[in-house]
Amino acid sequence: AKKSKVKMAKEQVSRPKKSGRLYSKAVFTGYKRGHRNQHEGTALLKIEGVNTKDETEFYMGKRCAYVYKAKRLTACPGHDKPSRLRVIWGKVVRSHGNSGAVRAQFKKNLPSGAMGRRIRVMMYPSRI
Image (cartoon, rainbow, N blue to C red):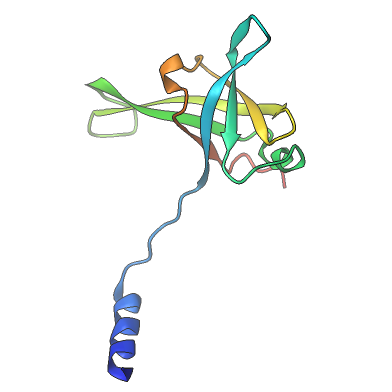
């Protein structure tokens, strides 16, 4: 039993350090709306682990990104290979309701097909 514990400890040390993600996970739940009209310029996001209005305060002003794959390859500045990945950038502007949802405005309005999909809420810019 002792040999196996030593062997396991050696395996853990030799493994290269894995980098953690630098964003919080959120879900695009829909657009801001009233009873009859919806406003596509403002997206509603539910951030993982945020359940009260007070907890949303930390995320105000943070950048958020909708990352998706397109059909065709496109070259992006700063990268040598063309990629299918695309990003729509936005920022968290205010809280929405009492259960930890936030409103975000994106450079281009999010497509309706993005509802229920993952949004990355970055940990910058810092206000601390």
